[in-house]
Image 1: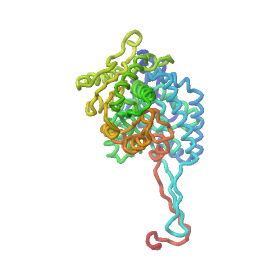
Image 2 (image 1 turned 90 degrees about the vertical axis):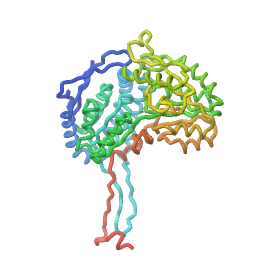
Image 3 (image 1 turned 90 degrees about the horizontal axis):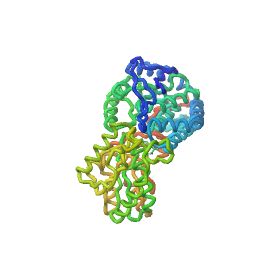
Length: 493
Ligand code: UN1
């Protein structure tokens, strides 16, 4: 049993509230430990520690700041299996996926460590003689990170590592569902030599700690991943304080399957992206937009594959689909299945809670497939965050693209086709932040920008170089070595 507490100014401390909540294994119902539940007082202490630490951290040369990330990357690598096992136990994703997620964290550490030797700005000519002009990156200051339970390691590293290398100090509120992973990650940064106060961890609810972070006058930027509903309120409240707010929210990702597609490949992509992580990825495929000419064949092939999927505890290497996070997720998913039936969609398989034998101990939902779904139906429009896929038939690429784009989200999309003209048309016209060709909608790599359009984001990106734009301010610097007062736009015209 583990007790997860806050990490403030280099000390592991329970909240002064004395309140804890249970940390449960979603596959077995087993109590893994407890996690402290904080209030505004704990947050204030964490922010004060961050403010003090950042004054020194911003002056540490960036390559030296990066050394901490190299060491953290090394430790993550050495403990990959331990972290992956812990991840499967507390979040439920199958062990192969857990290893993949920890790998994202490792990759992010080394990638951002490399940025410590770049952090590039521009050197440009000046309009005037004997004058030098350049832009440099300055830290934003104190970064407040709010992260979800579905990728407790990867998403945290997408945000924390660029923040750290950029010279910021961090106050992190991870999801209370996955505290062991948050503790392990912070422990690794501490061991890697991150000075005290640069990384602070505060557990608590979104309503108490999350809201207080958004309102806190000393937090300069909020980087949030979670639902569109909460993201909107973070943007509204943060906007009032003129705070920088970077949002990564929901998705309703579509896979287009054209009549010339390699159907076996398409089926692999649909199964992996739709039912992997039990559909609990913001990149999960939840719509299959298929050309009518291959619809029936695709349905048969999908049904055959779904019949052979094994549900269970993700620690068992032979299991394909793990549990969903908690009973309320199960209710939400089942609610959508009922809505789909009422709307007139045809249920091809699944559609029930899976609770036979051992499965009854956890929260499992059968991989579910609807067909003859109309694009306007709620199951085709709203994020379900569970293993439910809707097949929408279309007659052309144009129609497929229109259907794909006719949702309130814009994170990821994909097209299966052999035709290069269709590939480039789709690449241009699919209005999502991520587009895949002949692959599913999941599996973004950390050195590229991650995020999306419309209800998915607000113009910022996680991971990749783009993340440095979130966590640094541009500063334009002019050095005049002429010895005279040169008046720009006057003396040179
Ligand atoms: C998420 O679901 O919020 O692209 C992140 C992917 C993963 C990250 C998903 N690399 O599916």
